[in-house]
Amino acid sequence: MSLVQVDELCVTYGATPALSHVSLRIDPGEIVTIVGPNGSGKTSLLRAIIGAIKPFKGQVSHAHDLKIGYVPQKLHIDETLPITVSRFLNLQGGVTSTDISDALTQAGVPELEKAQLSQLSGGQFQRVLLARALIAKPDLLLLDEATQGLDQRGSASFYQQIETVRNTTGCAVLMISHELHVVMSASDRVICLNSHICCEGTPAVVASAPEYRALFGSGTGGALALYRHEHDHGHDHADHHHQHTKVVE
Amino acid sequence: MIRAALAGIGVAFAAAPLGCFVVWRRMAYFGDATAHAAILGVALSLAFSMSIFVGTVVVALLMALVVSILSGRGYAMDTLLGVLAHSAIAFGLVAVSFLSGVRIDLMAYLFGDILAVSRDDLAVIWGGAVLVVALIGWRWSALLTSTLNEDLAYACGINPKREQLALTFALAITVAVAIKVVGVLLIAAMLIIPAAAARPLSRTPEGMALMAGLIGVVSAIIGLRAAYVFDTPAGPSIVCIAALTFLVTSVFKAVRPQR
Image (cartoon, rainbow over all chains, first blue to last red; front, top):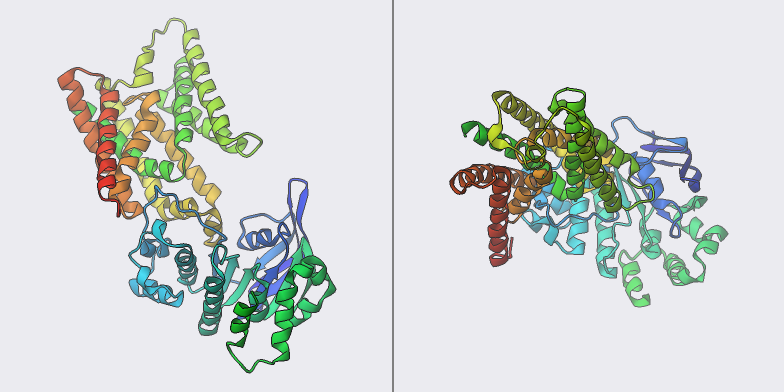
């Protein structure tokens, strides 16, 4: 049984179509990444899945009792709103202090419990958002460009954390990312979106698809080359890829 | 005097938690517009001889709904509110002038007439205040989540539009009960100033709401006392005390910047 099933989804803003006839399903435990150029409807797709926008046509169905952990693209905390990290993690109530420290540890920031949200750095903030999404023990984690504003190192370790979380909790992950090299290494499946689904499949299949190359052009040649390069070498070195990433960029 | 104090406390009590949301959501101007619309409500209530409370609640609610519907349709929010707020007060004042035979004390509605609060008024004020606090207390988590981020709310199964409606409703009731105490022009002050004054002293949203309530109540009591001693208008005196508290806590914040 899929966690989320999207059938022939069409979303429009006024007269402008944002998504047309998008169908996909997310199965338990898999990491699926959506890539696509700006304005290709990636965020609209995520927002349709959480129910923030109504489909114009088609439908989105959730598995019974599906728990979604959502990490938004950015979250602006108004300076006038005082809130500590632990209070933020307990927004819906019914969370124990053990849950809070567990979630923060899982997200890699165990020391921030008492901090004020408005005083965190960008990287800390994203991890607190991740902790908040994890605290309800979700079946599906949705991340909308969660590493925006983080540097190369910060985002690489953030995605590593996501993979660790998936491996320990077994939750599925659906994320949007611009960082193609990270996407290609960490995903089970990649969906290339440009209003409609251009191509999808394992990272290797998508990377060699002509539609994908047409969209991302030569600008991503480095990432693609890197990806294929890594595959030529096989999978025997666990951190091989990350070393290469740093060298190439 | 006791009745006046009780009325002031009632308004401060309702305005505190609501005022926090008004500040957090940057709705200060929205509060103003709703309050200004109340003068039109007063005129209509007098014209149709119904209760002023009902008239103001209805018009304030209509105003809030019109703003919600029109927002995001080509005008910036502040332009829209500027148009609606000032039109409402202008139409209200004109409508009042049409009421032949009734000489109403307009000043009482513009600036409040807390010393003339009757036993019935007090019941309405406290009934409204309890309703507002109960409504906000009931929706607290959902309101807070929607205030932080709408998509976050959707992902938690909360409909932020519905929460916005609850807040709008609470605002309309608060305006209606506060009109007698501080008047149309100063209602927004009772919402915003205590909340803003409480901000530097708080670490959590709940703490800020409680602190705003405390500041509001203390301002009401001291303001009334000052009005009596110095023979100044009561509503503005209350607002002045709240404003001075804001000054004090802001200085406190500047001295202790780690908060």
